[in-house]
Image (cartoon, rainbow, N blue to C red; front, side, top):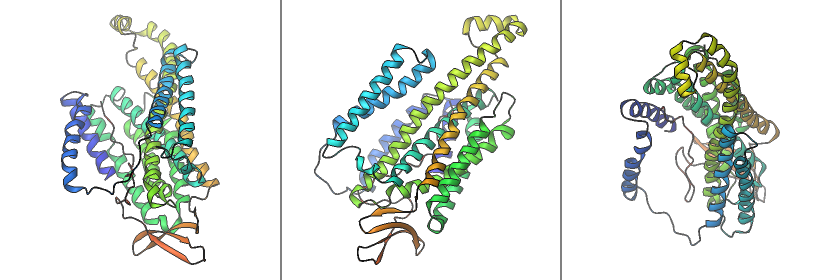
Length: 400
């Protein structure tokens, strides 16, 4: 479903951008949201009500802290690391996020239960999702820029260019779901993260002379297949071994790590992109002034943007530099897969392992007396009562 939604989103985003305006990519969600809100009572049963209170202080400090952190990286790309506003943003982020941790430790019903990070495998899963989401958001963002600004693709053509990625993501997710009970999560974490790192490393070789087939398609397919192997694995590892009433918190944290990783990762990569682009522009200006036409120089005086082919070299160099940190995101998954034991989760009854029974994924763990109990896993797409849905990342990004 996620891959299908990604394919539809890519095509729809391209058509809306090309035929109407890029703002429609955002506005189209309004009628969709209204329709979902109207149909939800007809098809979704009300869950059991529980008494409690909202963690307003935790929500405010976490949101403000992350916003300050992201803004600091974006500001640094334009104004530099010594800018007073940049420094102030990072300082505010540190204070707010420390306050958030302090509040969550004392809250009776925290928005982010810190005990979820006590398990090494689960916390490692969150780190991997944070890292891979950062790499994925950056990859789609900068490849869209490249194919439209350097290769000259229209928004619809850019959307079509990403369709093969949705196919390999679906293939990787299907394989991991089928063989996860046989081999356990560790091989899929290691192989998937390694493929993601290889794909990003290959994309770091991009240049203004790269073609879609020769320099874009191959690394995107490798990266997408690696991400597909990780999606199901990370989801099951994050929610395995938790009590039913905590399943919502465990899966919700995985979703939060995906969104936070995408925001912070794109901000960091944008900083790298901006710095590398400025340096390359300084190198390209002398050649442009020596060989550019009078019309190009007049346009440059007004826009301060280098025309092709000099501008293409600047953009390609910035994108290439932005993909270098992305390789480290894949390395995080490899490191955790090698060092940890993602196939085992601890419960009071003993170790928990994934298995298969009657065609369904199961979780096996030992009772205190030593006998083993088998708990059926939910079918794909289903979730236990009170669990937040896992928002598997998909390449449904705007092609504007």
